[in-house]
Length: 376
Ligand code: PLP
Image 1 (cartoon, rainbow, N blue to C red):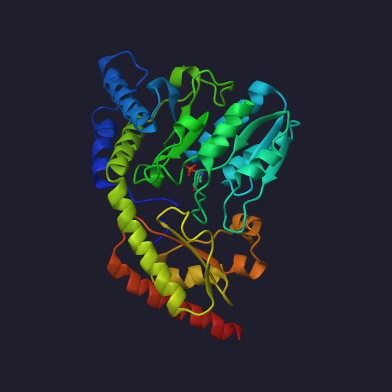
Image 2: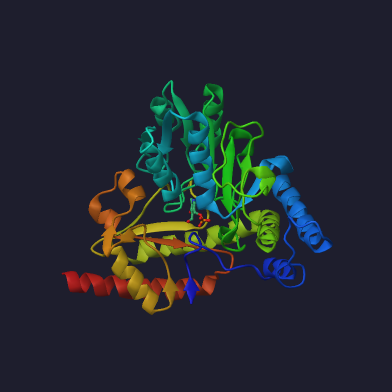
């Protein structure tokens, strides 16, 4: 398989898996237990928390482990709503569904929402956020980089503005952890997810600024200092910290390699296939992402034809109850319907190699020709 869907998830790194295994096989104690088996797990969690905090640039007490990016967004948004009781939310229109759906859940309880559209390049302007804010705004979410087009957002400036106005600012860093520096000093809360940086699925972490006005989402035992109930998956937490540490250590090298692969691919796709368009800003984007529309094609059809050749890519459309809804992100960017429907996302990772590109370009050419021939 040629895997070009690294924004969806990544293959676990061998060293990360090796670091995790002892905590599933020999040292499987519950980190909450008082016996020595429990203490071994608890100590591993302490070390993982220290590492994560060091990379995030915060205190270990400001790190909370949870199940991933979805829980991180729900925790921040719903936790702030619960603590305030009422108010207005400012959410970028290109957020992951975790923020959009959480906000819509809160609408049912009387919270009001303003969605801020990006520009045509897929970037949310600082001024648009400022214009959306009201006297009663309690929460703002603008992600560090978008998952569909990879565009990098001006989160430091937005965060500083929110701080001046006393608005809780959540930054979804799921697509940028291990790729870009974390904007910890500019936000009240940020979320990361281990499976996006060669760690295990089902494990994430948030930085939550000490003293934040927020209620917990998951009640239960006293895990995570009483903020998030549920037995910690010590192995996954160890994996998250190991993966984050490795990603940070090799950040420059990985980014350079991945950007070179992506740039080579984009240059060839645009030059060798007629009627192709790169979606999202050409420069202000994470190194892994290429989102391309193919005139006269349907993204879903392209995905299936590439899949038949063993190439994994994705489209931004959502499939529910058999119906395909066009990408919300590309639509919010103001792209016309045909361009939205013909978009395919290719996301590169550290396990991809130069010699895969030729095969993918040839397969793409063939697939595009086939679809266009049927349509004409
Ligand atoms: N936020 C962004 C930007 C994402 O890309 C994703 C996953 O695709 C999530 C949140 C959800 O993360 P998880 O899969 O860990 O729940």
